[in-house]
Image 1 (cartoon, rainbow, N blue to C red):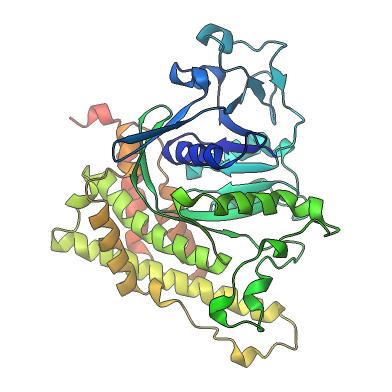
Image 2 (cartoon, rainbow, N blue to C red):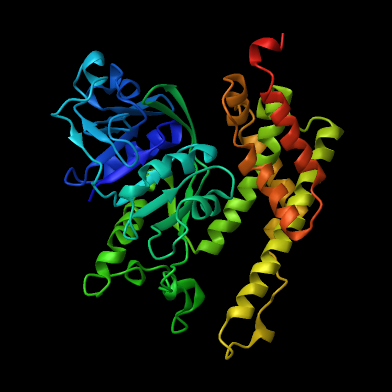
Length: 413
């Protein structure tokens, strides 16, 4: 089975390196580039990725390379020989493999949040209901955006895995990533439109809670009549679980959403403030005003999450089987980790751990690149509008970042 990686920044390279390290060579790993010129670098002439941790370097090679190309149009791609020269790689030749009709079984998306939908739109003709897509973006709302814009039909929609990543990484040069902070990747499977319960083993009352765990056979197994429908999902989950160096853990989707919400709030405070103020993470929260702003964002996010969880719970109750004892369902129970106090502690903890880091949003602003603000504070603003929760500080941060981005960096001096 072939595994594709799209988005070759620090997270994408780190993931591709670990995939190639654990997978037998009979399972190709393909790196997708926008153009052949971008794919060609002296280092990539051997299709090699180097990962550095505490000065120790490890390299993996043997990747296939595929490019979005101007010749094949939507859905197209060309897999080419990475040994080509720069001039040769810029030209499509008959010897290159045209992939316009080759289905993609497993795709890891490590792109920026705002570029994910356009990239997947390009690949959509090669994605089927049997495909599996792993989303590794910052922020929230990416999956909902994809469903609304690209995969509206549940019957033809691919399987989706959502992941929350806390591994810290940065690129020293193309395909040379520094794994600066050892973290973890918590991932879960988005519920199945065909009603298959991927978490059935967690409800096995014959075992005590501490013995229950998620089981690959709940996804599918070789004797399952629908094995082909779920085969790529099972294999992708199995591969993710084998990435020990990244701390990968398969969790119930509710736990993944909790982790994503906590990370969202951290990023919705640290990213815009560092981008606006032009400082590293550790310079924040040394004065009362920045503490007050952090507190306001946490309070607004907590209220929005509470409204969302209560509405989702009520919707589930309304659509549930009449035999369900609804009086036993805690409709208003919200995880304590999403309280304003707990969120504030998490922000301070992460900021301390990453105090020497430059946020991705500050880096984007300095490079005059688009930011992910629409999937951070912008997501909280949309939640507030949906559930009638005031979020004035998050709205102001969105506007301030957009104002900052409107001024080219070379005009700030």
